[in-house]
Image (cartoon, rainbow, N blue to C red; front, side):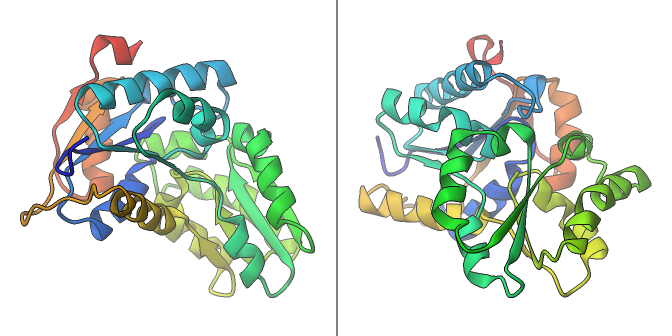
Length: 268
């Protein structure tokens, strides 16, 4: 691994761009690679074996282009595949998980809610997280089918998307939740809509900043922080249709980008 090698970031689709955004802010000179497994999104309803296989295939692609670290910017992939990835690959692998710990510390009402995919909420990893940080507070878990698909389409502000947000969020507010934990990397792109529904009295926690800080810490620990004095670059790949994915990435990344197809062995 070279200190000037790139950093790979993977997600089931475009949601991990919310994490890529924070990594870019925190590590402005690093070269970043992003792989969206859009052909197989969303992961929330996929089997654990399928998600693990897809995660391994994409990390193998990153390893083939000499990535010095990988970020799993997908809560669902973290929940079922992170142990397998870390046992298989020697490069640093940073994962994301619902930010229940800071939510538990910050709640005033004693009730927090976690918005995530069904697969994340049903996983052993989430059960362990709940056991560690959910004691003494009321944790409401809310699967949100349909929200990932809306973000994958770039449909962030439509009436249909707002109705979905209201369906999932309003009952949580009625039960006293004063903090919403975004347990899917797609959901930060719906932050303005969620805040419009919750109002200013409810806090929303996105763990992307913490992931970027942890990545910096891990790179520094291994002497792998970039020594360049130029701005870093970003490159994008997808297992889906590149032109379709490009239209959404252009919108979410707020600049025009080039999206390439993943190599065939990482696209299946």
